[in-house]
Image 1 (tube, rainbow, N blue to C red):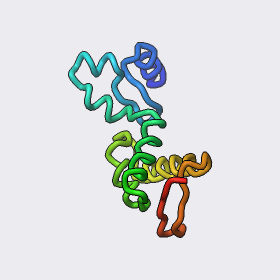
Image 2 (image 1 turned 180 degrees about the horizontal axis):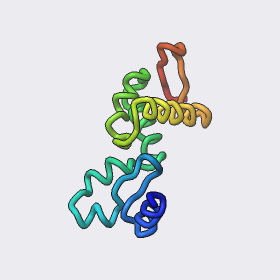
Image 3 (image 1 turned 90 degrees about the vertical axis):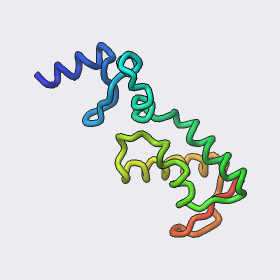
Amino acid sequence: MKRMCKRHLKSKKLIEGRKPNFYIGLKLAQNTGKKAEYTKNKGFDKQYYLDLITEAIKQHAEMRRKEIDELLWNKLPDWMTEKQKKTKVNHLLSELRKTHRIKNTGSMKNSLWILC
């Protein structure tokens, strides 16, 4: 019965997300005045985070991992756990590194990111 209920709510676009991290849908958020809550839960697209990292490094010439975490932490969706946020930042940094936009000039424990 629960599965049918969630499926029905998702089909009507009243909720979004994946189990167990459901949150209210866009139309419901707009109609109930929960726009900020919706945006916090939805997060931003990946390109936004990638651009944020590269712009910050461009402005400061270099950034440590801790500083990048501070930059992104409150911008990542609220439903994410600390571990999930850490993993997300790892993936973003890896993508930028693999596409040769940034590189790590520090060590694994004490990373220092610069533009390529």
